[in-house]
Each structure stands twice: as structure tokens, then as C-alpha cells.
Amino acid sequence: MNTIQQLAAGWANRLLKKPFVAAAVKEQADLTAFKQRPSLRIVAGIVIIGLSFLLGWPAVAGIGTIAVKTNQPWIVVIGGPLVYGLSHLVFIFGMYLCGAKYSMIFLRWLTRKGVEQLQSWGGPLKE
Image (cartoon, rainbow, N blue to C red; front, side, top):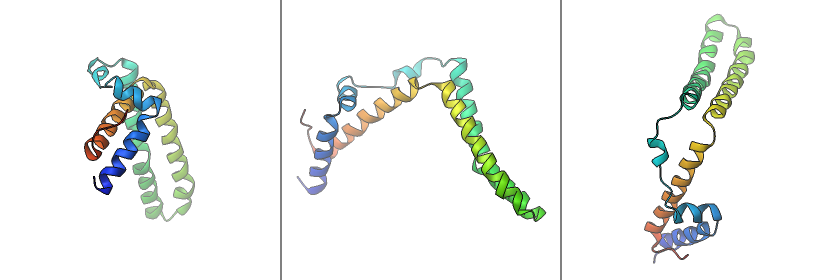
């Protein structure tokens, strides 16, 4: 085994000692829950999260452009942080509507896939 393979195997073995990782691998966590039709609340949450991205840096850049065109730097000094803070609040509200269920499903699947990738780099895992 070369150094990369030894490191990958070591990390995979350490990760498998964590209950969350071990359960995700043992239960073969997958994304089948995403095949179900999402509720209206989840769709609204996703739309609101998307809106928060429009309110983030693009809106701050727009305010900056207005400040430069009007030669009023205080517009961006005050408005930039306010708009950016508002975008965070909108994002948090969208996450609240979506809930943690789908995030946890995705995280379990990603954990399993990551450990499997380490396994492919470092050889067989020790359980």
C-alpha cells in the first residue's frame, strides 16, 4: 500500500468508529425518500431559499452599483449589510419550512458514499 492508500484506509477506519457513519454504511443509506412527491411546504421552502440567494450578493452588488452611480457611498455602507442580513433571515425561514428531514437523508447518503470512496482508495475496511 502506498501512502495515499494508507491514509485513506486509516481515515475510513476512524470514521467507521463513529455511530452515525457506521449506521449509514450498515443500513446502506440511499436517496429513495427523494422519489416521493414533496409537500407544498417543502416546495415553498425551496423557493424561499432560492429567493434568499437573489437577495444576497447580487442585491448587494446592485446597491453598490447604485451607490457608485449616485456618488452616495452611504447607500452601500448601510444598505449592503441590511440587505445581506435580510437574505440570511429569508434563508433561515426557507430552511425552517423545508425541515431537517431531507437534509439528514442527504447527509447520511453523502456520508456512506464518502466512506465507500475512501474504501476504494485505501483497500478493504476493517469493521
